[in-house]
Image (spheres, rainbow, N blue to C red):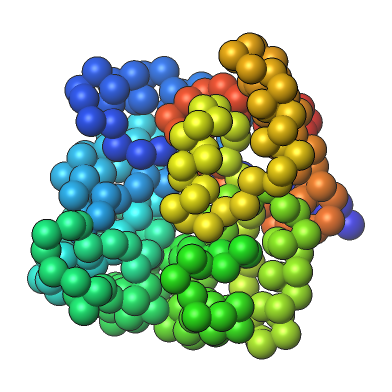
Length: 279
C-alpha cells in the first residue's frame, strides 16, 4: 500500500495596497498554486480589522478555481456579523475555515471580549452543520498565555470536541516539540490530524520579533549561524532554505500528515523548499 501523500497548504496575509493584492493574485498565488497545495489560507486581522480585504482576497482566490480557507475570529464582532460572513462564504462555495480565538484590537475593551476558538467552532457548526472543514490552531511549544502545558492541550481538545476537523500548528524549529506534542495529544484522546506549520526564514529580524510575540523558539545554533553571515543576505537565504528543508524532511519522514507553509506572501523560499523535498 503506497504511503499517503502529505497534505500541503500555504498561508497568505491580506496586503495593505492594491498593488500588493494584484501582485499576490497575479504572481505569487499562481506560482505557489503550481506546487499543487490542497488550499490557501488567508489571515484575518485583530478584531476583523482586515475583514473586508480578507473577504475580497478569498473571493478572488476562489474565483480562480483554487480551494481557500479564510481565517475567522469573533474579535470585536457580534454574532450577526459572523453569521453574515459565514453565509457569504457558503454562497461563494468556500468549504474550509480556520477558526481562531483571535485578538481584540487595541482600544476596544479588554480580554472580557475574547471568545474562545472552541465557542467559534460550536457557533459555526450550529449555523452551518457540516458544510465547512474547520481547522483550528495548535501550539507545540505551548501558547504564550497558557497556564500550563496540560491546560493548553486540554484547550485544543475542547476545539475538537466542539467540531473541529483538524489543526495547524504555530511554526516551530524544534522538531522534537512537535512529535512530543502529538504524543501528549493522543494520550488525552485527540485523534484528528495536526498539521505542522512551517515558517521559511525570509527576514530574520522580523522572524525574531514574531517569535518573541508568539512563543516560538528559534534555536541558538540557528541564530549564531545567521549572525555569522552578517549582511550577506544571499548566504542567509541559502542557509534558511537548507534548515527549513531539513526540518520538513524530518517531519515527513517521521509521520507528520502534512505541512502548512507561512509564506509571508513570497514565492521564494517556499517554492525552493517544496522542490527540495521532491514532492
